[in-house]
Image (tube, rainbow, N blue to C red):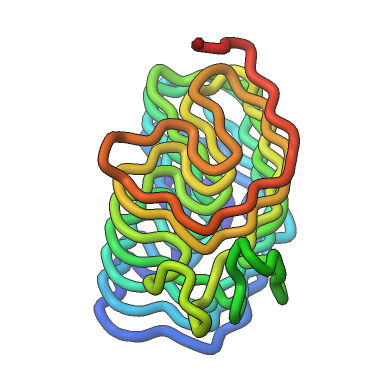
Length: 239
């Protein structure tokens, strides 16, 4: 993908895409609102057993715009299961009006299940990382949501069985260096619903609303069976 404002293979998936290995490279300059999501812009179907290796993910922003960046899906309203993303996302250039970044999905309104059998916090074990790499930028944004797995989670991330012995968990190892951005988390920048059965590695540096699991968590939400290992650095601490 090079020098195009919207970059993905499929604009919308309504069916099932599975058993793929993708090698991708992103090197682009953006001059307007843009979505970069590698495989699918809008997923309302099912993505299963897809491994994405992004050799370079370099984006230069040239105007005060709205950016959505992901390693797999921009907007998920369906199901993502047993998928992996390995990427180092680098954003430089002008500040943004709105910025949302998530390794698996920028915005999740569906379900995202990990591939790690029998992972829950009591055992602390995992097989492979579902997401790994880094997110780095020196730009600022009026509104931002940055997560190692999803930028914004409005439904379920991790598993659907809340720690049952046959559940699958999600393991993340993402370094996040976004010192001028707010709402930054190891799993999600913003969570309005459910995150469970997750193992989170990686250091995070951000401005405000920063967490090893989620950056900002709304009321009446669930977080269960989660282990977060890493260092959190923030320039603003609210007591």
